[in-house]
Amino acid sequence: MFDRKRCEGCAYSSMLNEHDPCCVYILIESKMRGCYGSGDCDKFRPRTQQRRMRICKDGGFVYEYI
Image 1 (cartoon, rainbow, N blue to C red):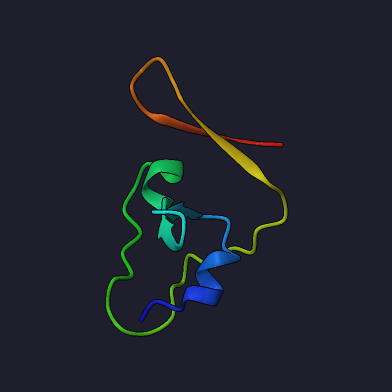
Image 2 (cartoon, helix red, strand yellow):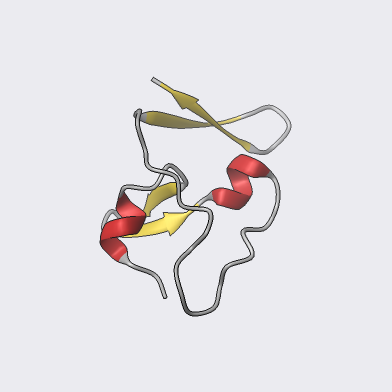
């Protein structure tokens, strides 16, 4: 089950519609997260730095830590 407060502090989260956290694990790691059922996400990693997303020339997303 997704926990909004925990997801907001995760290194793999981004904001969707300015209010809802959204997991971008698949964009950063290029593989599926694999934890969609009930229970805690085992991919959680606390965010220690701010990051900025940009679109790369290959058509994907790149996250840069600032």
